[in-house]
Length: 235
Image 1 (tube, helix red, strand yellow):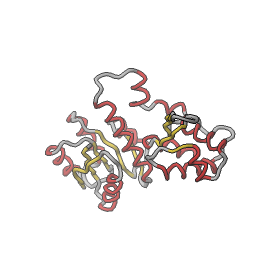
Image 2 (cartoon, rainbow, N blue to C red; image 1 turned 180 degrees about the horizontal axis):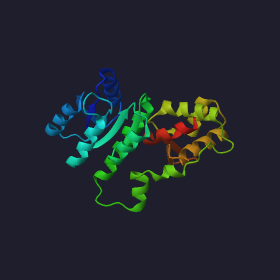
Image 3 (cartoon, one colour; image 1 turned 135 degrees about the vertical axis):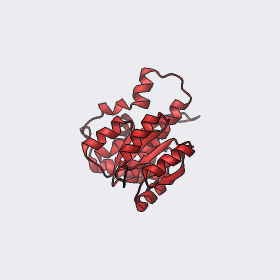
Image 4 (spheres, helix red, strand yellow; image 1 turned 60 degrees about the vertical axis):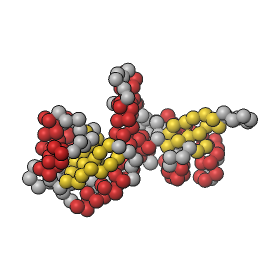
């Protein structure tokens, strides 16, 4: 389990972050702090793996804390969750090593994508001593997103994509077949296959072919939750 500290001076926002965190597997809430000084005390006493950090706080701000964490060379990662949307603060947070940056207000899907991606990366590198270039590019740096199409491919429609995506969200972590999507969505099998292929190509779906004792092999699709943010640009 990854131990998390939430640093947020607004009690209501802190409570939302706690609720969201409880919905993501692999994390344990270790502390909730409302100031930088309080957070520094916790970091002295506990082993924290991830900090969910606000920027705007009375006295020292979140960037001050991020800077001190980096100076201490502690093995702690930080995801910034802030209303600050100006490029100066965003760049400073990223230069100080923030692994992700969520701008308030945000939806749970974006929060879940950030936490799932961090957990998956953490799990992946835990048993690794070395990485090859492909692993570094695709599992750590996520450079595959650079090559994503700007728009839906010709022949695909946004409204139909939304319908199919909403059906997929129902299955969530359970594998599903093309036929199951067809039955729920009420869209032709040929069309559904085009959209599922597109989602596979952009990394949102994982596909595994199941070979039975009789009949044709069946493709089982599964929702890739740490890539769910990618689909949002097309909806």
